[in-house]
Image (tube, rainbow, N blue to C red; front, side, top):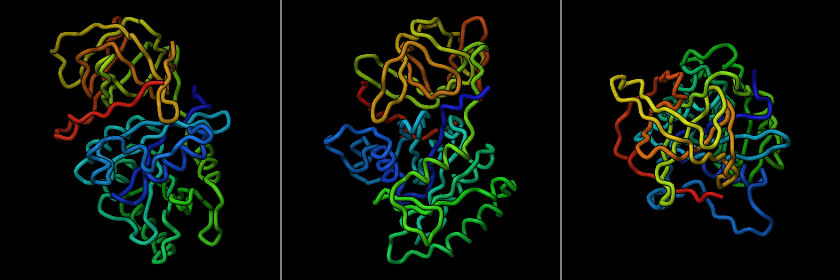
Length: 320
């Protein structure tokens, strides 16, 4: 069974091709801001180091409501040094938006992140961004993207990926390079039409792979991941295991709080269902790669093992 009112997507690209700026506009047009609310550019780059360097270091989660569908969005790093971060979060989503600069075209990190998405069988929406640049070369970039897809052994369906033409800075998208867009509606519509809804096997025992960790001084470590199956309820007893450390003692805990992503913040919910990307607190020593499940059905999920000093950094998001 699929949850047709939910989509999980990641935005992938080479560094400085405009991912975070596009997410800014998606949030604005998706109703994440109140009327007259002050808006900060590159709002998803919440860390001091990220703002100082102007790059995304850690993946960030957000969500918008488009019609009756919730779209969970993961803004990923584009710099090669943080490629492992991209690999892990790709397992949380069902499709990707591949952003390519209309002047620079596909770059080395474009190839890396796209290859990972194709290996996972994800559907791809190609977005040629910054079409308002005076040095744009849209038609050559289209050919370069198609050549890259063929070079990476994309399936026939992936080769037939929809292609949009955007100006993230202006918040516009269109289905043709000769047509000037007025808003991001074409992008939202393409996400709903082309990206599959996540599987929602709510009747099976609860299971979730921890793909990211956040920290809050009030509740401690917060596990972030997609619920693979089942339903999680507040104060439910849970068990924690790890696929790569099967000899470790099974840890038991309680889901003291469950959060869904809602615009720039999080909202507390009493239960969450399969397919959704959530955050939860209640496990003091939870780490990336842990599997959270019910105590009577312990089954660990494999994950991408990486070692990078940047992964020790955490950025808090205010809960709402």
